[in-house]
Image (cartoon, rainbow, N blue to C red):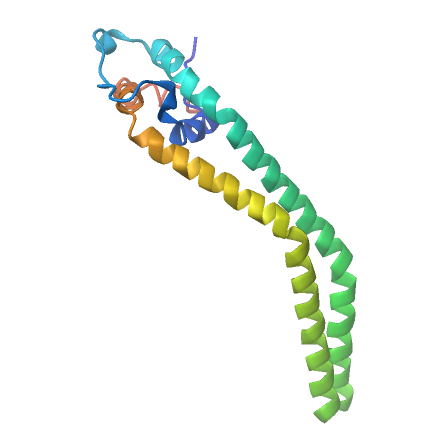
Length: 168
């Protein structure tokens, strides 16, 4: 049976795992660690990954919402932007001078207004994304101070467990 415990998503989860799963002051190494199989290492790391799944899923959901909102905004706003840009191009190409300058300013004002409206619409999601990202960073910092987890990750790497799930 292939060891699949370090797929990219699990690697991401392991990168952000919280140290609260194990007691503070953990020494990292345990008797018998060197004899552990990749499956045993993965099994011991599972609570760490499980602790992070919800936070990672929430951040992914927010990212998908931001992507969908951006696509909706682009579909809605592109015709308005294209119209003022074409009008400015026509004014500059046919009339020139002050009419071109006025049309170019109007086009830029339109673009600025659309950009501000889109930023205001996406602000709640962007704020949510930032808060979720900060949570994951804090958890990652905690994870890095967890000697047991660091030992398990090093042990897994030394045993080649991280290579066993890669496509060949």
